[in-house]
Length: 286
Ligand SMILES: NC(=O)c1ccc[n+]([C@@H]2O[C@H](COP(=O)([O-])OP(=O)(O)OC[C@H]3O[C@@H](n4cnc5c(N)ncnc54)[C@H](OP(=O)(O)O)[C@@H]3O)[C@@H](O)[C@H]2O)c1
Image (cartoon, rainbow, N blue to C red):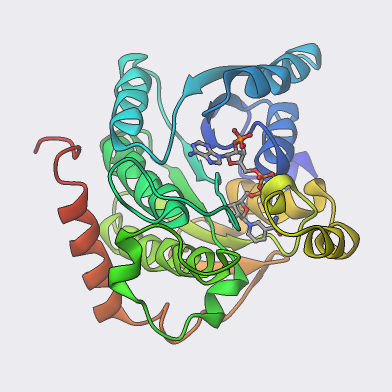
């Protein structure tokens, strides 16, 4: 199996949100394949436990402090990573919140601010390094729930989560992930950087921790393990058959259809332009 992989051994991989869940399972697997990992997370304590586990198995991983809900934290994390002067062959934008209500310090709905804005900003900062390190991959962890969004309520993106369980806001953030990833695929065309969008399937992870107990129980019973959930991310990061293919969406290692909204190029432009405007104080110069 290892021989058939896009050779990840010795390649530099940055994963957001590897302290738990799908990100943690992805990190453990890629470390076993010899990738040199940076695990970017908000909880140093939790992430260091994963790093120790990886080191005990002979793998290499370092910690990078990042709070994706805070643009200045994202900018500082990117600057710190760039100061290491090492390549970046795979960026896995995995971290996420769902079903947690709140607002970011800059006034964005929590899931949108974390899942979309934080990752957009991180990718903007790391874009030149990905290109310089090509062949490279950007993996965007989205979700099939983006299919349930009928329209983007723009004003709701700039206020506290208003729905009872935060589900519509979470779905919108996952739609934003796809719109953004498809724009990234266009932007990276001809650079050797491919973009792969993945849906992990329903996973019994920590992401549902703020939902009411009956829902949490249902997700825990019906969800796959974190290792099963990580499978498509790992495949997208390592599979040779995806070389030169970009901007497509996969579940269970198979290309899947995205919603009409997610395929809407005008909406993707609108999302990109608004995102750039909202993040203008933190974007890299040039
Ligand atoms: N679970 C599912 O059924 C499912 C289905 C479809 C898609 N997904 C997607 O899969 C991805 C991973 O989710 P998961 O299920 O593995 O969830 P999880 O177990 O809750 O893990 C989420 C990770 O994101 C990190 N994170 C959250 N907020 C952050 C922030 N502000 N800054 C930096 N890191 C932050 C968490 O850190 P802490 O440990 O500090 O909280 C954790 O490491 C998400 O993008 C999610 O939308 C999940």
